[in-house]
Image (cartoon, rainbow, N blue to C red; front, side, top):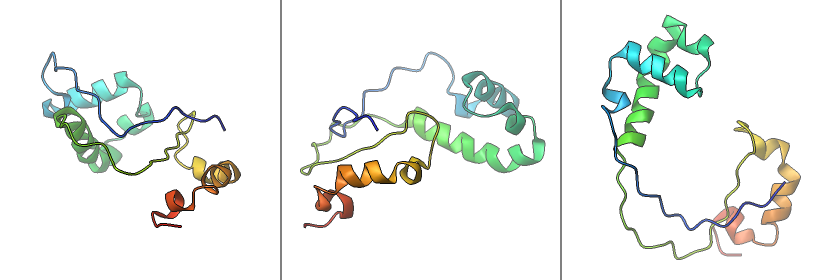
Length: 116
């Protein structure tokens, strides 16, 4: 597993929206734009019953992303270790257990959140 560059926990300033926020658009427009973005399978977007359940949740996620504002917080006063998958693998912690263990073993306080 390749080591990612260090991060300091600060969020980048958002770019200004150049059009109406996606989360405020009609359902059909919202769904079409999700399809264009490519993160939601067309089989999901085309299933009305599934979208009746997932649509409001997806819209809420987009609303958070679109309305989140940058705040100049103080950097964290502790080290942070982050890991990311190379692909859309939400469960890479299972498939890369040994590599994660090797990365965290020298730093037990980072693995548990408690001092060693």
